[in-house]
Structure formats: structure tokens, C-alpha cells
Length: 312
Image 1 (tube, rainbow, N blue to C red):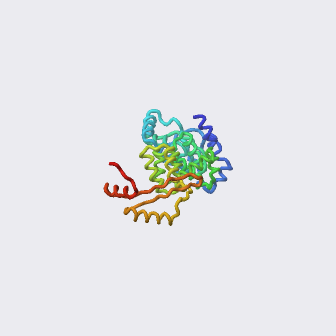
Image 2: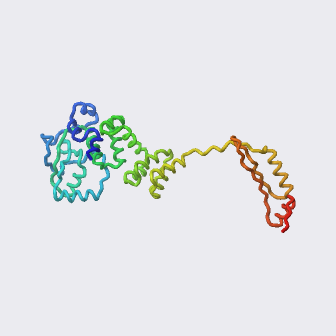
Image 3: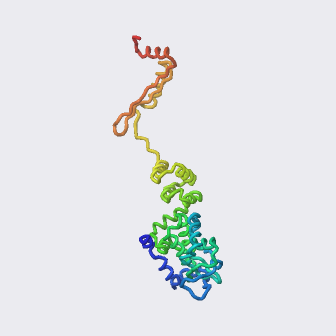
């Protein structure tokens, strides 16, 4: 876990400490609401009424594991909320920044109060911290992660590079995540529910047709296809048809037609001739001569015409 946190760049501690820096406040002034602490003191943990903690509009997480939440509720009933929620003051209320599961569990357990740490934070900083907390805990599914990046980018007019800096990710990782939002809603739902992996989604994105994406997504789930198997199928579907080999007929077209007509008259039955061909590398492709007959008597007649005599 320590390695994962390090890979995120700045951790939550660093984000919280510089949450009120002049630079951050200046860059988000237009997008921020006026934040007023609900109590004079900030920084240290303290108990506040559960009813005073309101949901955050910046919460990137929308899917919560019901079984895990039930277990947390039972724990909270016995031990209470052990880790304080991170909030900011909004008028007489406290807006949640991090700790959505703990707050839900506290409400379900009918607690009257919860421990909180109050910080001053702009809208951008609140979203940034919420994203970081969930990413470090690996609580977000790939679609929620992508939507979080998109919200940062759109709401605060950030480039992909700036978003990557904010959350401590490589720019390529943010770019790849955002591409998932190009998928149709149905496929995004499959990815969010874990029915399709990010690898599957990337392969489907290589298709231009949304109809083909939908068909292959369903087939992948139904057949339990691996990413590699899906790649092979998509490659087969999107590969241009092979060019026919350059070749030259050994019989001119007009002569071939004349010969076919004359043989048909001579034999009194249908005849088809496929001429031999010469490839550009000099190799020969054999031709064929097909003569139709309806029964053994007609076969004997044709054999006699061709001079074949049998002793049977």
C-alpha cells in the first residue's frame, strides 16, 4: 500500500496542508463557492452532529459495495466512527470532502454525531482531495475515475496535463481513462460493474461503429472472452481484404469463349473451362475442364466421342 501511495505523487496530507494556499485560491476563485467555517476552530478532530454534515457535490464515487457497507455499519454500531471525516464549513453546515462510506454507515447506525476534521478548501481542492482519497483506497471503478478527471478538467478548465499533476498520475493514464467516456452508456456500465475490463474497453474503442462495439461487448461477456481473444477478433474484422494475387490467364478471353461454345456443340452438353494462369513470380495455377452428364448412358456417349474404349 505504501508503494501505491507514493506513486500517487502528493498524498492527502500534502493536499490538506496546502488547501488554503494563495496560489490555489487564486486559480479557482471564479469556480469556488464562499466557504465559511461552521465553527471558529479548524484543524483538530471534533464531534459534530451527523445532521449537520451534508453530501458533497464533488463526490466522484457513485457505486458502493452493499455487503462491505453493511459490515462497516455493524462495526460502527460497536466501535463508532474511528477515522474522522474530512469536511469544510459551508454556512452553518459541514460539507463532506472525504469519508462518504463512514458517513453513510454512521447514518445507518443511527449515530447522533461523528468526528470530523474541518479544513478550508476551494471547490477545486475539495474535488481534488475526494479524488485522491478514493484513488489511493482504490475505491473508484474505472468509469468513476474517468468522470472525476473529466469533472476536474471541465469545471476548472484544466488540461489533461494539469489534471494529472493534481492527482499525481501520469498524463497518459489520465488520457486513457478519459477515453473510456467515449464509449456508449451501456458499455460504460459493463466496465463500471466489472463485466468488462479496461483492457476490453480499449480494444472496443478501436472500432468506429458503435453498433459493432455493442455487439462485441455483449459477445465478450457471453463467451467470457479474454482481452487477447477480443483483440484477434477485432483485428480480423477491421483488417482490409487481401488483394488478389496478380495473375495472367493463359487463354485470351475471346478464345476461351469460342472454345467453350464449340466444345458444348461438339459434346452436346454443358461445358465449363477455367484456364490455367501464370502468376507474376512465374508459378502456374492449374486450370480445369468440366463436362456435365445426366446418367451412365450419357457418360458412355461422351467417352465414345472422346475415343475412350472400355473392356467392361
